[in-house]
Length: 501
Image 1 (cartoon, rainbow, N blue to C red):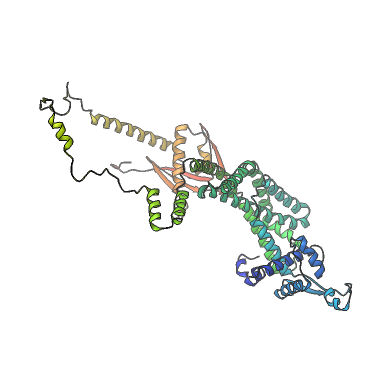
Image 2 (tube, helix red, strand yellow; image 1 turned 90 degrees about the horizontal axis):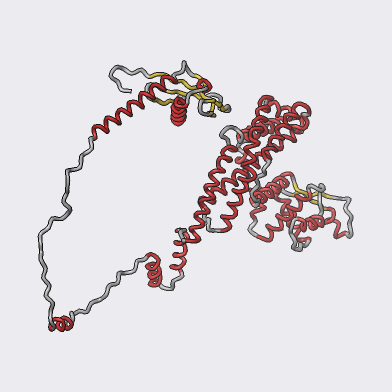
């Protein structure tokens, strides 16, 4: 298959499955399914045989000979079905002779299309599949390829067919796992169906797939290294005679497809490839699951799901019979009621005050004195701290740190580009500075220049990529560093007189 397979699509291929008449479409699809089932049992089948197979594929409605003949004739016109004459069939009467001698079967185009549609429907309706020993199966397939390459080349072609199956399993497993994590992060987890399904997918991936994957990853990479040493192109060329392909153009296409599938499968297991990202995503999945549980708790206990609240308000507004009632519901939902105050009478009633003035009054004497607001300060004023002393102390600490970094940088100077193993046994203080410089250089890597660089006090560090498939482990005084293979050069910076580093 060429890379531009999508250019070869013909919309007429799917016309049978796009019939607007539901009954006719179902019967046509059922007949195609019956003929696909029959293709694995015999070369051609009569109408009575097809009617018997309809029940096996799940079509239980009774079908007359006329309706079945009409469907078969229509499928014959589309090129999915071909007609045969079976002159050895028994004939009960002259009127029955023509119908009994006719037999049908799927054409090559029909067989391929019906099988593809059946597989597509099945894959759309399937559940999550994460085989815990999928990587072990991949390793066994690769070991089998190497064994057949050395001993039995005729079995290479069937073994290469397993590569595509493993590739599809990995693609579906990864896609389902990421979609489950995304569902927990983005959808309404108060929905029991969404939450339960995504939780089961994530727990299944963590329990059966991610844990087992870490154990098998090294063995699969080792098998790929042996396969690359033997030569992928050599393995495919040796498998070509066993594939039974006669046309030279088809042989080239088959070889290109097998090499591409092996390359795609190996890309899953490269350092920082899809498998490692899938394992790393397990930690993100745990956080997503915990976050979903937290959001689910608050959604059920405190009603903090804002989206659900607004949807409920919208339904309540829609259910009101009048606009005024809808405004009342809106005001109640958002607390937009008008302020209510006690209303005083228009004229003040002073009768009570007159009664009070008629009696005896108590005299109260009030003495006003002028006082100063605020408390008076007692004792001597508070001493203002000497900020200059603190500033000088800070400058001294800064100078000491700069001198320390410059001393360490001078100790890290290399005679030229060197591998990371050059720094084996480095002291803890020097290791901390080196690792920090390496991180800054990797983060600032310039693709156009092909290198990354960074600077510290008195020195500059430049790194270049080494073997992209190799990881290097270096033992330091206080630990071990595992990093990609790079070349590192640490050089001194020359400062002119009066220039500050």
